[in-house]
Image 1: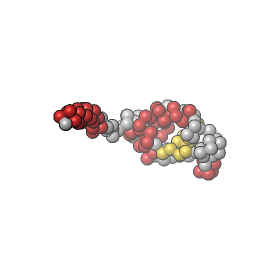
Image 2 (image 1 turned 180 degrees about the vertical axis):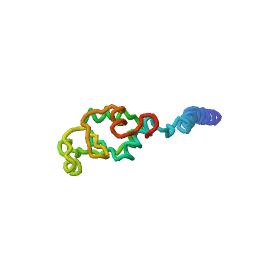
Image 3 (image 1 turned 120 degrees about the horizontal axis):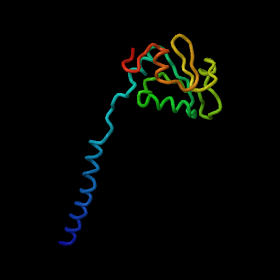
Image 4 (image 1 turned 60 degrees about the horizontal axis):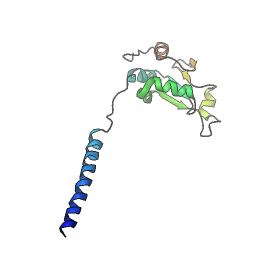
Length: 132
């Protein structure tokens, strides 16, 4: 009987040694919501009516998204590809989008392909550092 109690305590102790650090890690190591480096630029672009038309399978679109990092979530992004990867959404057809990415500005002008953050800021009247 004494051996059974000893085994039980060893098992509980082992479980505790494994679970306690995992619980502490889960509580304290969860990612904190933080602002992205280009949040102000991205928000300014959106506020000024700038849109990025793209496709999920487009490597140039992925590069453009990487330029913004987590700030890309503030960009007005329109997905043009349907799940089959071959056909285009009605919205993009009507907008006459022929390549990806396509940036459309509030004045209706467009730039095709990967565009530097500096060019996007200049074209829209935004600032990379502080929005406007």
